[in-house]
Length: 239
Image 1 (tube, rainbow, N blue to C red):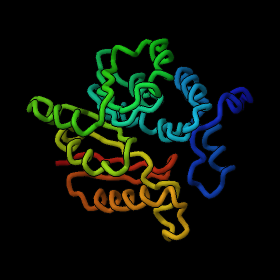
Image 2 (cartoon, helix red, strand yellow):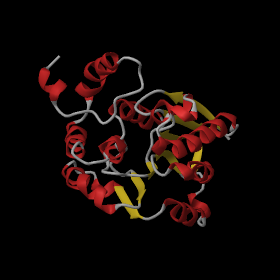
Image 3 (tube, one colour):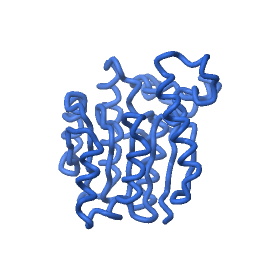
């Protein structure tokens, strides 16, 4: 493989595979060589951020791009943007007249990736809203025309509200639409005894365990819990 591809920029997640070498093999063989240049540039721009690990993992993003294409997504919603890696991925994947409602409390982080988004020629697809997500979702639901109008959703935000987001997204997504939740393995701590979990991760661990149980029992969705990045759960609305 081209060494330039291997060294291009550091990855944003170490993955949850037992073998770091195997994870690197997946990245270098199947993921990074196919990563569009704007995404590689944005990942590089994010690498020096003190919270760079918040960015969507490139292997998870590759699967998301396929899901977007499989459902012919055109109208999408994203809760939690950070510097915009997953947002740019979506913007590159949907049609020219597609739209993304992107919600995040931090405009400053989004502005790190914005010049790259503009250079990629996809800024016109994005409606960025600087806000807490729940008020925006509730406002959308005030208009009956928004119910069942979204093809795809992505959630990578505050873990305490994941289930609240899910309940609203089940109304906003069309039947057959997909929502992807990030960080649903929480660094692997969901399978650890609490006493072995770092103190700073314990609250998130509890919320994640509760979410995983609720999603597994939710008859409204078909799910797949995939060990990509920090764990993603793919939910396809079936009713």
